[in-house]
Amino acid sequence: MKRRLLVAACFASGLMVGCTSTDIRYDHQDIATQVLPPNDGWAAAEGPVTGGSNALDVHIYTVSSRKEFVEALNATNGSPTIIKVDGTINLSSDDQGRELTEDDYRVAPYHFDDYKKAYAPAVWNIKPLIKKRPNRKLTGPLEVARKASAQKQKDHIVVRVPSNVSIIGLGKDAKIIKGSLLIGDGVENVIIRNIRFEDAFDYFPGWDPGDSFKLDASYPGCQADYVDSLHGPQKCRGGRWNSEYDLISIAGGKRVWIDHCTFSDGDRPDSLFPPVYPFPQNEITQKVQHHDGLVDITNQADLVTISNSYFHDHDKAFLIGNSDKKTADTGYLRVTLHGNYFNNVGQRMPRVRYGKVHVYNNYFVGNAQGDGVGDTAYERHVNALMNKPKHNIVRQALGAGTASAIYSEANVFDIENGNPSHAIGNMKGKVAFDKGSMFNGKLIDIIEEANRASGKPLSKDVGWTPTLYGPTPVLPVSDVIDYVKENAGAGKL
Image (cartoon, rainbow, N blue to C red):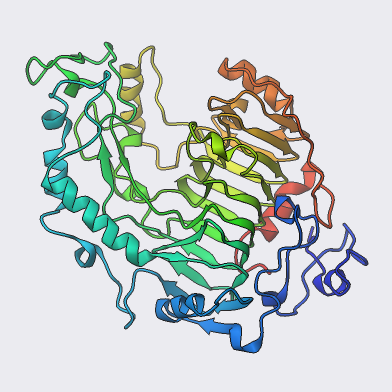
């Protein structure tokens, strides 16, 4: 069933006159001048989101290289600006179009092999623990060089988007790759549509030896004090690789609409970079992570609508709120997600802290198998190594974090080998609400079933009810799969 917005009729008067819920499509007018439909999610809560739709001819650009793209962004001076992306923009390229790689950003004496040897658990973890964990503040020339290398890459591949801008992909193959768009503090009124975002690759991920570290006696030799090569904290589970760069980072920005875009790791998924340390630091989650989020919304960002977009083949999709301790985010982080498709994504679809987040008519597809079975963490670890799943393991689709208030309705969750707690998981939250959603082909009370499966109950009293649905009502859950498959992603306007 095709249900897209008939823009010409709807926007001619600024009202929804002539729009119906039965025959909704985009016409062939220039999508660069289209604006967010009135009342379409939280982005529309405090006035229209117009991006650069009112741009004068002098502020309309067609770009096909990083150089042209950055020059167009820098030339806006706050004026409404339309930037049309033609073909592929590689943000990790120089002004001559040559792709920049690790060798171009690396600062001596950094080399990955030297770095992983210097901070290997067998070397670093044998030092006295700090608060029952290995020292998480790495020291030494290799860590200094890694940080300098990372900063050099960041200075080049992170591109700031100013206010009053529309960034629009032309045709079906517009891409922005190997970098990150930053919508920062003070930036408002941004529209991004019809673009494939791929592979914000961090060449210099950092090892955190204390991340998820556990003094777990089920692991042979695991203990707090180092004795010898077979007994000590180096024989405990834990440690993670962490990377930077989201494909889009909304860090303090406001009134943002992302629509009909596609997000993935491209042809360099993290599955190509397995763990580099031996047991017990070779859990699936200890892969060398080169990608962070797809879209993160943080630092008092607010009023965001993400619609009709495709997120695929990635582990951690996005955060709304990035710290349990950022109480200043209270009252912000209001986000709507509708009509989106999450396929082979592991978690954070999204994970929410503090925000009021409306999630409706989305389709989540994944597989929760892969953590292994057994009575202890050690047994599950050993068993998981035999399975070697090729998919991203679903931990939870919607993560109810600290002070979050997720309102979910009419979503479809198809999670093989999963249970309802994989649809809505308790991540230190207290509340979450769902109505009319389907889990693995059945209409169930997802919150009650998730509470039963996880043992970490969530109250259904989220304290608010959405009112911002745009020109169309919520689709019945029976129509969601067909609608989302047909409409979600770039190249479908």
